[in-house]
Image (cartoon, rainbow, N blue to C red; front, side, top):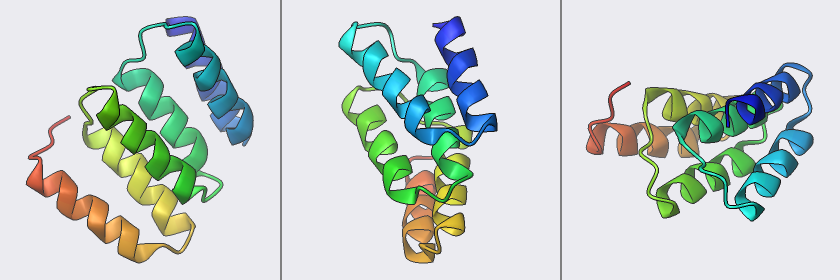
Length: 104
């Protein structure tokens, strides 16, 4: 999964969030282990383009998969909300992060 994470991060840096999420989907379809690093890389790919809805979907997928969200998860998702002018969702995520006592 390290190679997948690197490719997803490369997609993020290139602003190719669609390709990052497509790769994530392929990993899920192959039943590869999707850890917090892979989820966070996918959320970060959505962050720079303000794709807050996709970022929130990824946070939800993470929770459904029983993968523990961390500070990086919430920071990336909150940033996506900020860039997408979804301040109310950013505030909800922040409250959820505090409620879950998230650590790094």
